[in-house]
Amino acid sequence: MPAQPASRTALGFIVLSLWRCSSPDGAATKLADHNVPVLAVPPEEPPVAINPVSPVRYPRGLLEQGIEGRVLLLLYVDSLGKLVSDSTRIAESSGYPALDSAALSGAPQLRFSPALHQGHPISTPFIQPVHFRNPRAGSTPE
Image (cartoon, rainbow, N blue to C red; front, side):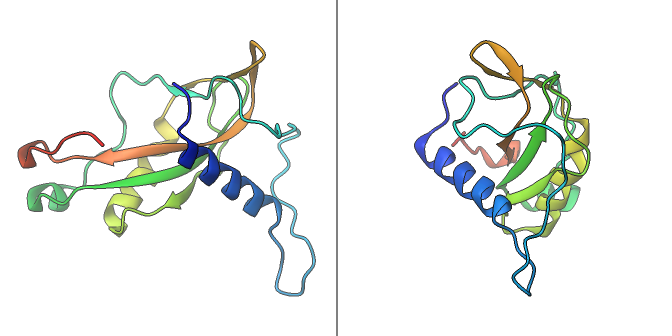
């Protein structure tokens, strides 16, 4: 499924922002080195979640109140589709700390097929949406 233009723009901005991180004194801050080059162009096929059931759990209190939301996670997977530990960040908050926390807590159990570039699996950062939809609220997909 091709990325939507807004998603590509957001991903590009996030990757560029991470690359340009600096400390208060202006010195460059080195991010974790995973010894994998990041492509300047997005992969032809992004990583795809392959869990048969989502490991993300809807916070009970918000479910009972009918509160819904979407969290965008910035994830980094290696060429085997394995989530790189400690790489998960919130790219866009739902506005509800409990939903954001639930998305972050479930992310380590997510499994992915790797991204493909020119037919070869690659490591890559990407945006993964996590939707919290209350089945009792009769919400519709975005």
